[in-house]
Image 1: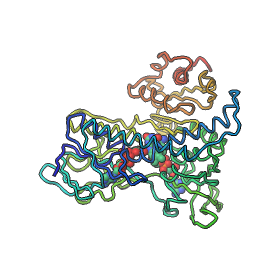
Image 2: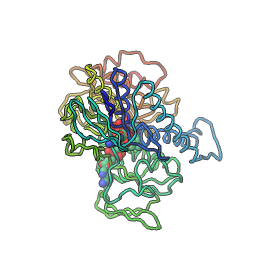
Image 3: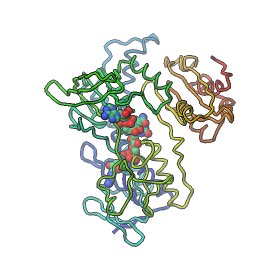
Image 4: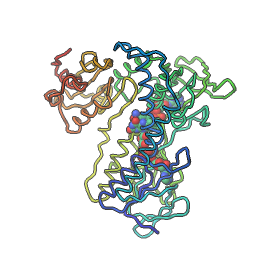
Length: 472
Ligand code: FAD
Ligand code: NAD
């Protein structure tokens, strides 16, 4: 039976990164993954590479290019007639990006001497100092240390179970072969808004039904308000505070009965229904009960701040544990755990995980929102700068939105940064850096920012905290 220093279960961004880092640190490492692509072939990379971050961003980019040509280029004096798109080609481009990256992980494993094992893994028990792990197909391996990185799967709404044809999850929603004329999405979260944007730009009438009365509650209220205005203007129909009563299917399509926020019964008929109401941790069939691995009330593996489980030498990272379900958080936890196993001092600060929505405008944030600071009674100062007054944003023709910086009034330490606007996904990283180094808004204000650049909006927002912005 093969015996490894480290066995990682799951090859998503949590698992494959943990495996590579473990191997880099000289530990003999195997990574077991059961994912199979549409052709039934093993495909490393987990949700993120196969049906998440990467394919969604590929389609967001393609659809946004189409929107730019058909709607935005005329402002630049560029007109094009008869512009069309080829959906099959768009999907093939997305699939090629995915397969390039998933096969890239195979190469990275080779380069770093990580042994990939394909199949479902489950704990079988303990033998001496090692854990015994079974891999579907009969193989068994031993591991001195185990990293669980089994990720998550879409939450099923009992009223609308997935059929993979008309009622779909994120996988189905990334692979429509025709533009649905009427598309309904249950859940106006990240997936609903990103994929809703994709299909709207390509011609679908998109309606989002969201249970919460608040739009994007995790974002700063002012950002969420601006986003709701922008998305509504683009044509997304967003209903908040709804209750889904029932979903049935007929020749006419998928009928969704729901109550609106005023308690009035409503009905919608859709060609496709995407259900995107969050995700649940993948702990089924892992053998958690066999070895006594403790799960929390939400079915996630319970871990401490260093991702240690209740069992010796078993760690868990990524979507399968508490914290935001984000690829970069999963990877960072994977690195931390590999370094701890190797006797180093790994750490991962969950307060510094940036959140990003790749809509147009993009939305990105890190740290505390204004409503969080208010409710915890923190004395803060706010500085804001609109992209309308930023030369680069105007030149790009993408001047909606703003940067907002929240800093402690007494110490000036930056507590939160919120951006809605062009390239917010890239701009937020300087804010993450600032927070990681406990910077004050004055630190940012005194750093030279290149001109003309979008990052000058961050600079001006920092100046605005001290009421000395130059360009507003
Ligand atoms: P996963 O990526 O889910 O990987 C887990 C792997 O473990 C899978 O391959 C699974 O098959 C395997 N596995 C599970 N159980 C077993 C077992 N018992 N034996 C063997 N293998 C097993 N995050 C971002 O940060 N940015 C984004 O832009 C973004 N976009 C997204 C878009 C969509 C549509 C979706 C659905 C998600 C998106 N996410 C994004 C979230 C991101 O994909 C996840 O947070 C991330 O993939 C979690 O990584 P992970 O390694 O914990 O788990
Ligand atoms: P989410 O938590 O972002 O949104 C789910 C939404 O569904 C919530 O607003 C919730 O209130 C709503 N909801 C729940 N039950 C409902 C019901 N019965 N009826 C109507 N609405 C209901 O989850 P998601 O959009 O499914 O995405 C899953 C995960 O994937 C997220 O945790 C996110 O972090 C990750 N993701 C990240 C990105 C990114 O980083 N850009 C993109 C896509 C997905």
